[in-house]
Amino acid sequence: MNLGRAKTILIIAFTGLNLFLGYHLFWPDFGRLTTVAVTAEDIQETEAFLNENNYNLETPLDRSVKVGDFLSVAPAVGFQGDILQLFIKKGAGIVEAENATAYKVDNKTAYVYPGGLIRITFEPSLEFGYNGNEPDEEQLKDKLESFISEELIMPEGLAYDRMEVTDSEKIVLKYHRLLDGKPIYASQLQAYFDSGALDLIEISWLNPVERVPPREMEVISATDALANLVDLLGPSEQPVNIKSVELGYFSAEYEAEKWEIPPVWRIQLGENMLHYVNAFTGNIEADTFMPEQLP
Image (cartoon, rainbow, N blue to C red; front, side, top):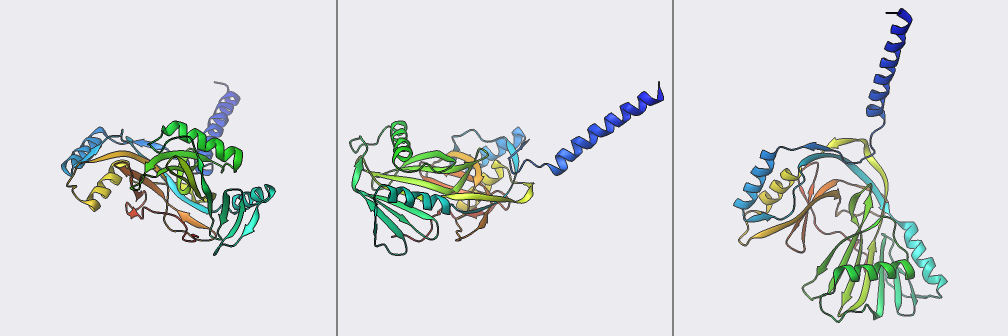
């Protein structure tokens, strides 16, 4: 073989190898979650353990173990300012409110709190075209999103989560923020309806700042998260249906400027019960989140 040609082939081969290694070492996927297979036997053992403790898995279980990172977040202060500016442009006047800046126009009052919470109340309530019975979820969702888009401001990354019916028969539509296709459960918008009318929109929106560390770390699998939760809760006296098991970001901790939230497995039991399992430690996170500054 021609010596020069052989050298050229070797140079191309080594260059390709260096590019491949450099990509994987120095160009991480910035937190995008990737998958590695979990065995079918693991799935079967987990389902057997759940059944022994009176839990019924109603959702397809993610047959994978994933990697993730901490997410540094901060309150969406700019979004708060945009809401207030919108009310001012519509002729709103300032009203007294404890620990909040508040503007009222027509039947709408916007309360903005230092910690990031926004509450928009409607007095009288805003009719939404159903008669107090449980509404068609898709229709109500579409009407609410149209209202937010036309009358308020659509938060960046808004994604629909689910509808809940409270013990007092109020309807709550819940949203969270998506980042690279994964939910930030701690970034929330909730709309409350009573007897066919909108009473309140409550927004605690977060901006992603950075991921820590920049490289991903392996997280526990969905099967381990389920096992940890059932170990904590113990056997159930009544059958419990597991509705969903999803990976995202969440923490019940809240700070005024910037803080880190871990990846979690969110597990829904029954219609309304949510549990968050830390995807690094396997510990159970607190299941509520909302800044304390309420009117």
